[in-house]
Image 1 (cartoon, rainbow, N blue to C red):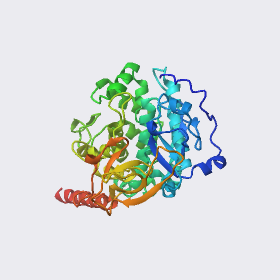
Image 2: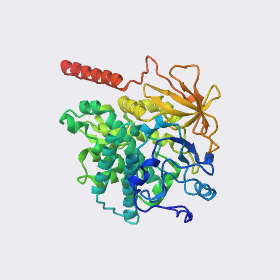
Image 3: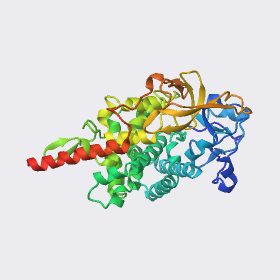
Image 4: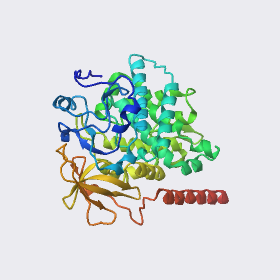
Length: 448
């Protein structure tokens, strides 16, 4: 890992923020902006965490940006930040200090594990801290259900292993919470409450690439640069990871570690031996937790910059691609719907430009019409002293207006909309799929 540039002039906190002191700063009146849009005098609405020490806050909420701070942000790997902008009270429900700090704790847990094992050829970890961190995050998400939709606040972590593990665990948990009824259907041998418990999903998603720690550093670095899933040396990480966690974590979590690269169409890895030979699992033969983690993994892989220092793919583009071949064939369709339900193409607080030339901030979104958010006009975001809000447009009632730009890129061609053949009604479509599967199983039993 590379050392960070000196940032001694940036205020750091090595202890958790006093919630009584900071609660007033977490008002939720925020805009999500690219780092190059930040200006002197703007005030942070959310903290910025250290990319190598994730539980350490570099800049706390309420910090006013200075020239020196702005100059350091690119060196610290900070690509996006949230600034305070009075008048956007409706965004408050999408933010949560409790969730943000629970996520930071998860990030620190995986970072600590890397540090403990980076020089070991046979890593041996205590997995209790992973379980504890996931349970705390799950509690925060359950207590702040609306804040869970603000998923784009993915922390900028220095190492790709940290980033992939933490982001996958977070999004997988969100999906699992939405798919409680599907989990009951897919885990029929368990009592309903136990079937809906997603803590093992979170642990498995967090540990899914833990086997990479047992690979040669050259193999890891080669993968982090190329992201070549066909690399046979890299593919060993799932078996190595499974050997590391087997018997030390819940069996469902271990299944995620082993099978998170399986694909719904049967084209994933690793293969397994059965009475009929060697084959890869297909469809619902794959553990449902692994299917959820796989859906999340595809999304994160698409979002990842194609080269070091590059810009992430816009969220809406990644979501659009997931709904098309070949990705749609590789993902459990119910898990994919869950993904669409928890990841807004345009998250509340995001600056967008509309096709009618209006610039504004997303204040609400509808999971059933993902690309038709509610947008509040903003006259000038470059002036931190001018907070001028204009009209509000609900794109569900103005279908002639579309989002033109977001995340600093043109996205007009990436918008996707609900149709009769492709509704984004999670519960309706999921129940139809469950009913169909039940009918198919009944017909198979009758035929036999």
